[in-house]
Length: 318
Image (cartoon, rainbow, N blue to C red; front, side):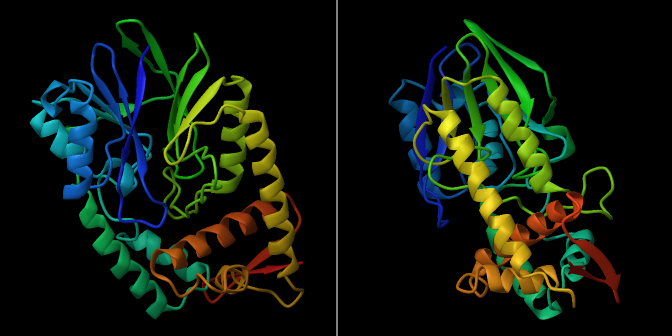
């Protein structure tokens, strides 16, 4: 099975995003890049280098629905004469903006984020949401864990690998243990466990870090020979990355716990201390709060700290 990476520019600090062309029948794209003219030109050029046009694409698989990965899905689909789009049903970024719903506001309030800060966060993501075309329910099909996607020379199996987002998915070719993991595994950075409403009960938070650790262990169980990530170079030594990730998470846990006092602290206060330079910067502010919430939730689940709610805000205490 021929899997070809195409590097696509993005307007985000993370840099280029990797799109993958599965050069088999049916011709398939895994992720598509953001909805910008530069990204569309780069994708079109990368495909033409392989003798492929948008019109030839028959299937679009989305690892997750962040703008840098899903933005061009509808544009490619329309030009490709209704290629099938598949994404996990727990994803929402292809439907509405990241902080667009009332449940998002409530979760930020619970974290102690001031109202004016949340309004600024929402305003930033309203602009970012313009980098993807929203899809209707009838525009896509659902990726399900264990689903086998057939190609002319083999099969890619869907792995639901939540953590970075609730519906993040990876794809494994078990014949040679090749994995395509989106933002679940990256060569040079650890993925952010983005705060999200729980897909089953939006009144609750999705326990992103706990789920992410399970996903990492599941990927490890395949003993991958190569892992293609959503950004950066391929990973040939997953075991080294796995242990580096675990160490980084343990170190971050210790630092977060050092900020928790008997008097109580909010996730917003932890985020400000954890990332003092990032807390005032556009998307970095939301990502900082996400990181703090994820680690605090995980510490609570492990019995390391307790949490109490007062006036609608959660306070974490030793």
